[in-house]
Length: 145
Ligand SMILES: [Zn+2]
Image (cartoon, rainbow, N blue to C red; front, side):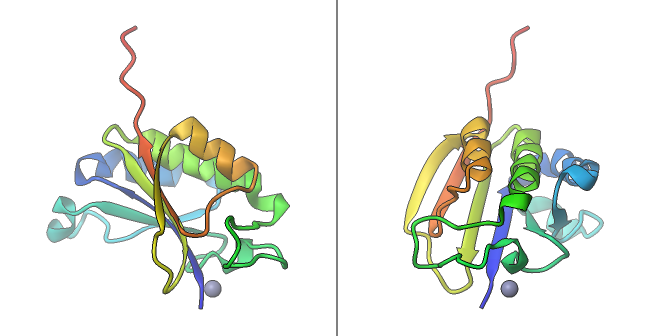
């Protein structure tokens, strides 16, 4: 069994989302965008990225006392800043909202919460991402300046 951390955005935001995933570098974690847009059928679909340390699942990001029955995940303290930066970059890149989940495979979402990108980043930074929570990240309204 495995922890999978995903960020999903709408098809219209695919280019911005893919660009953000490439720009993170060492400040962020590894981001694998599924079904890159060279496949025409993928362009109409929501775009999903998987966040991990070295590809695949996110189990290695968890601390030794992480418990999938707890309310929130216990990530390793040394990855919190990069996890927060990664979520900020991805969720902050889109204009049409994003969905973030950190789910143990086989678990269902029990609660859906609407949050701002800043809320999401704060939750990640302070190690409070829910074990069965779907975060719907609202895009900030475009600046009028
Ligand atoms: Zn795993």
